[in-house]
Image (cartoon, rainbow, N blue to C red; front, side, top):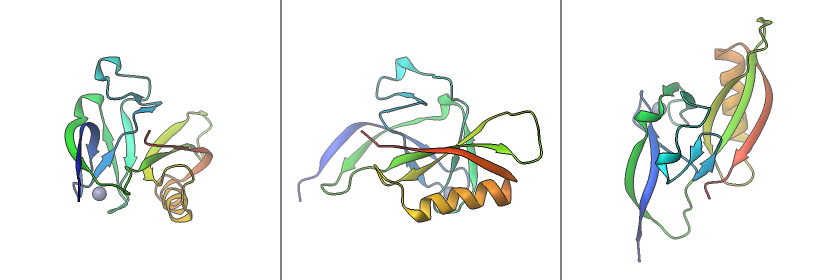
Length: 135
Ligand SMILES: [Zn+2]
């Protein structure tokens, strides 16, 4: 099988289980792979790990710059961006958490994973969700 190397893959690593999460090339997190354009407003950013279902928080300096094999037919995952607020606080502060999702339309299990985290761990209410494709 022909395997290409993607020289500009930016990732964060789950601080609990070491799972790597791809950052899309363009998102509210910034524009990749042009790191000199970073940071944009959303750092530090929170990510929900799809494997251990725990949250990690990152500063943009913690982004990993890796060369990654690109397997045909296996495009990198996009991100599901979820805005939420705490149910009991009236501050109106909007919190954001990211989790990997299939590009285009997130699957029910990806939405459910975030909903569970926001409601059960954060005691929060989801305000909006947007899927960000990798490309
Ligand atoms: Zn993890």
